[in-house]
Image (cartoon, rainbow, N blue to C red; front, side):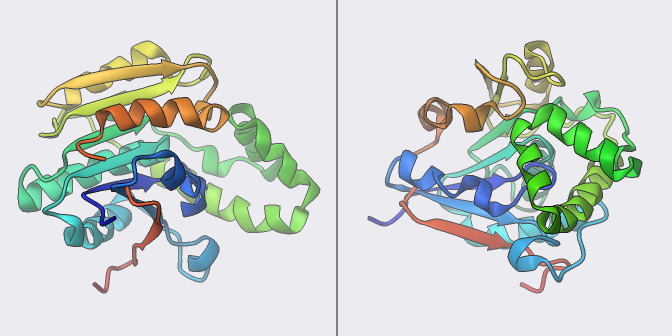
Length: 249
C-alpha cells in the first residue's frame, strides 16, 4: 500500500531516529513514518552537532519539501517539540499552511521556556539530571564507552535548546495536539495548555500516566490517541530523514 499521509518525528535532546523505530507497526498502514536524525549521532556521528536551532530548522524544512502535497504531521518530543514548532513555522513561511497537524509532547510552550545552562554541568551532574527525567539512562553507566559517545551529544543539544528564546506568540496555521505525562516533573498539564496560544487552527491535549518519557512506558495508548488526530492514516516502513548541516539538497 502506498502511503497517503506522512508523520515526521523529531527526537528529544540526545535522542536519535531510533526512538521511533517501533512506531510504523502501531500506526495505520497508510501513514509513512519518517524519523529525523540530527547531526552528531549514530550514522551522522562524524558531522558536528547543531549549535543553534536554526542549524536544524532550515535543513529539515528543505528535506520535507519533498513530502508536501500529501497530508503531513510533525511530532516532536521535549526538545523535538520546539524543533517541530519552528519547522512548521518555516514551512508556513515558505509554502503556506502545508502542515496538517503539529503534535507536541513533553515540552513547555515556546515562550514559557527559560534559558538554561545544563550543558555546563559536570559529567556526574549531567548524568544525574538526565536520570531525573529518564530512569533508563542509568543503564548506560554499565557501558562507559557508550556513555563517552552520547554525553557530548546531549551536552550540545542542551546548549542548543538552552539558548532558544522566543518571546512572541506566533501561531501555526495547523491544528495542534499537545501531549504529556501526568507525573512529568518539568511539564504540567497547565504547561501543556499554554501551547493552545500557538495554533490558530484548533487545539487539543491529552495526558497519560507517566513521567517525562510517558510515551515509552505506554506506547500503544499514546499512538492510538495520536492516530485519532492524524489527517489520514503510515506505511509500515521506517524512513530516516537525514538532515544535512548545512543542507546540500
